[in-house]
Image (spheres, rainbow, N blue to C red):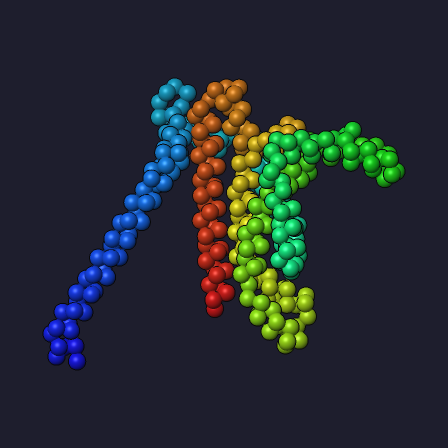
Amino acid sequence: MTALNPAASLREADNSAHLAWDARLERLVSFAFTLPCLMVVALCVLVPCAWLFFLSAYGADGRMSLENYQRIVDGASYARIFVTTFQVALATVVACVVIGVPFATFINSLPPRRSVLFLAAVLLPFWTSLLVRAYAWLVLLQRTGIVNSVLMGLGVTNAPLELAFNHFATVLGMTHIMLPIFILPVLGAMRNIDRALIRAAASMGATRGYTFRKVFLPLAAPGIAAGAILVFVMSLGFYVTPAILGGGNVTVISMRIARSLSNYSNWGAASALGVLLLVFTALLFALSYGVQRILLSRQRS
């Protein structure tokens, strides 16, 4: 019918051209609005990262070389620092998952008014300085601190426990800081779950535990994975908490970078460590993106 009506064909072609032009115009307007943000990102993120790569490629003699990276590969101390950093970050993720998933499930099961109160309690640590929180844990965990005093007063222990200046204190302090960041995406994923699926499982005779394991938890898995990756990536760059609660017994990459700059003014070595940390972070983000796509595709299927 369209082929027999030239006027209709012309109108259809004209409408298609207008739609294509409107789409291009919309993209141009969107790009114009985002251009200032892109310029800020390029100035504040991309330029410093490029400068970091540039400094890491220069040796002590001022010539371009890979001696900074070679020193990291050959040095056993650097390997221990990387292992310690990843161990602390992974332990923080495990602690956040163990504590955060049940707590997010509990908040999600509450009525709206009560859930707001518990969500405010989760966000409360954000209102306190990170430095203050680290020193607060130090007051609690040190040999003459509140925890040891209570344990000795109750007769649980005869001598103070070594609760501070070790991996335990570092992971505990980092978990306290990162737990809200983990709970928020998990809670968001749980609230997007269709309640009809839970009711359908219950109507078919599934117990609460079975429904949680086989229906609720798989649907919340993308949020749990996103929260875990976010906590892990952010934990790789922690400095204040390991420095205070580790007491020099826990050395992470950020502390080694600061030491290279403050004690030796070695910008090349510090930049090489920063570049490696940046590369690991980028790889983790790529991994998280792949995991998210796999989980979402399984949900759709």
